View 1 (spheres, rainbow, N blue to C red):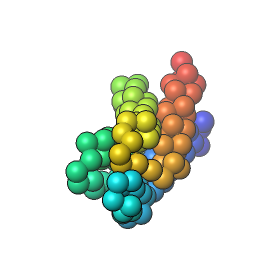
View 2: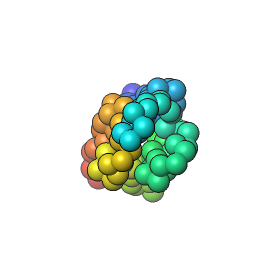
View 3: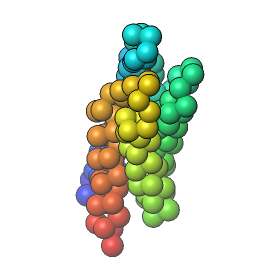
Length: 133
């Protein structure tokens, strides 16, 4: 097995871990400060009544797309697929962290392992692109 194949397998495993963490039911905790209420959601659920909650949903969708592209990269090893993986994993990382700074009446706390894993997929994809050149 060559280096390129090992990197592709590692990126696929990390992408799958990110999607699994995003799919767990308690991966996002939402605190309503005015009502003193707490609820947990998944990254793939729309948080009702919270405008910044759509960022979490889009982060979950981007994570799923990264997983599909990582499987495609494992088969085809194309530069365009890797560019898409890098951009989507960066978008998933950014969208998962964005609600922390967006709104203060409702505090949205995602499981921070998911953005860290997606960030590592972004960096790993960047390094894989440089390894090929």
